[in-house]
Length: 315
Ligand code: SF4
Image (cartoon, rainbow, N blue to C red; front, side):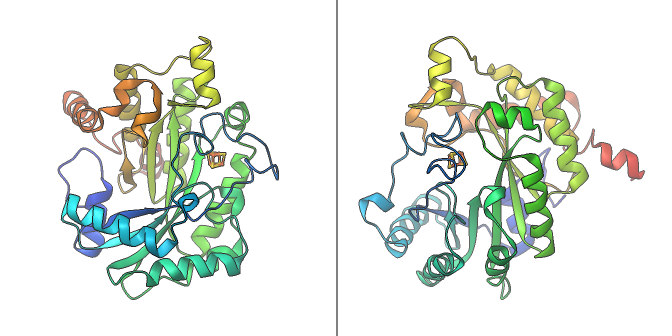
């Protein structure tokens, strides 16, 4: 873990440890679809996906990648007094195109502004292959920050099936091995509170992330966004979100089991707050972060305290 006083290794600290300064993400919508939305693997998407309903699509408004970078970068610069940025391909599945098309989009992002110093590419594990990861890897070097983010959510196939993910844990393992082969920085998205998952199921996901020594995780909780199946289930009384207290306890339990060097990209707060149906408390991102830290203080534990991989290896 880097020189942090937090009870976990936050992404901001990792960037400072690695580059000596903070880097801010400039979010982009390159107009990609998703095999779970266009029928290749499924229709309608994951039950929690708000990509068809609530999200505002910059690309549909006609903005090119360069235009999006310039607009969003200036916004970030003013808001955070930021001066270094990564182009973040965030919306839907950002490797779901030919290698030629991907190269054109990634090249455009890298060339769009002199303060862009890398790429973060969010995708599904079943939408990468050797060639695509070789392309992403080719941007590495010269002090750039290049990272791939995978939506895994859980290691349990029955839960993935329940949320209509249309991919499996095996797909993730294949993508993860390729990602390691290409020595790419990576972040794994996890959702706590998946329908039908027990505390033991969630902790098994944490243990597996520790065993695999994943570089980073972004922790979400299952949230009902407008126009999603989860919101319909919530309104019909078929799904209840975690309470705030349960989430705080669960996220602390989860982080205690991770390897101490795993970078924690997020512990609370999901995007698009204006479209949240439930639970509304998840919008209190800063307060939640404080409460999670206080819970660690109360317990006297921190990230890695209950990491089984450390116990097994005798570290
Ligand atoms: S994989 Fe991502 S973009 Fe595709 S349906 Fe699921 S949540 Fe939506």
